[in-house]
Amino acid sequence: TMKMIIRFFLVLTFLLSSALPGYTAELTQRDWMITLIDAFGWSYGLPDEPQDPDYINILTGNRTFRLEAEDVYAQDEDNVSLMSFRNFGSYSGRSWLHGTREPTAVHLRFNLPIGGEYQIQAHLRQAGHQFSVNGVMKTIDAKPKFTTVTVGRFQLQPGAQEVIVTLPANGSIDYISLTAPNLAAITPDGGWQPDEPLTWETIQTTMLQLLSLAEVFPKDPALLIIEAEDLAQTEAQVVSIPHLGQPSGGKWLRSGPQSVEVKFPVKLTTGGYYDLSLRVMGKPISITINDHQEIILEAKPYLDDYTFKGLSFVPGDNNIAVTFPPGGGVDKLTLTARQVDITSVSTLLGLEPPPGQQKGKPEARDLDTLASLLAAFGIKR
Image 1 (cartoon, rainbow, N blue to C red):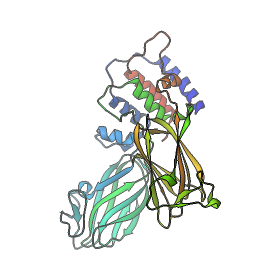
Image 2 (spheres, one colour; image 1 turned 45 degrees about the vertical axis):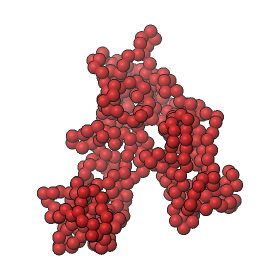
Image 3 (cartoon, one colour; image 1 turned 30 degrees about the vertical axis):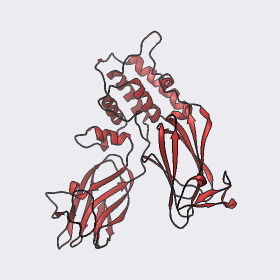
Image 4 (cartoon, rainbow, N blue to C red; image 1 turned 120 degrees about the vertical axis):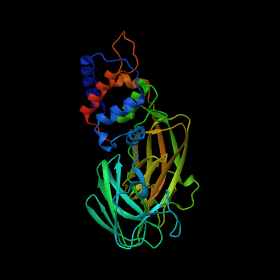
């Protein structure tokens, strides 16, 4: 990371020294959002006429989507009827699509903001549905009443998508969902406010996240430790099995024949960046922070420590949910604060003006300079 910062500083110094004077129109957070999306080539995930939520969806790393069939099917092509009665069970959205007495193709077209490997599920009724996803065919059966079924996992690129579902005779579809682990969020404190004036603090915060700079700052010696066996749980068992690893407090939580979710409620006086350490076993283990950021961990078959650096937490109540598979378990959670001084990020990245000059508001030329730099580094999430 330190080598990357040095390179960053040298390239930025060159770009700033060669930059031409820019105009002084006041910029907004929207300008910085668009700059980041364009600089990294993430615009493939935008629709033809993008709105603010489209940019925010990409930057916040959300990769969980539910698409109501009645909202995304090809109305001019598909021979289906919209229904809204509940004789076949509950449904979501305004209505659901019902086929004919013959197999009927339904074309679901939508935009995917961020690519990756997604699990696709569908809410269907009747057996014999044919799914075509990215050239892969799957036959999926459901019950006579609406049932949620897993179609499979598919590697998808960002941008326009088409999922073709051939309904069996008298078959029906309510929705499809796509899920993948969310990416680390890139967001100012308090979230994106597109119409708010752009400040250097917003740029510093998001640059810190983009470059994973939190780990450069020193650790706070005070640790927050939560023993899993001290939490009120109903499904996991408190055990002490020494041959599976030595638990820190002598006991730990282990699941039985089913997966178990353990929630760690964390109350923080101040928000900021923390290293999260977990002593766990089993695979896969899903770690969800504040119902947004998700980490998938392939842990060992015995208790061991795993650390994830520079994660962002808000002041006040935070929730960390750890889901482990049958036979897996969790011993403890540790949070270590990073003593990040956001005002020093400008100095670290060489964003401070030359001696004797005042640092004004961000200008268009500043964004052009930063965009050129970020594009040259080709940072990946």
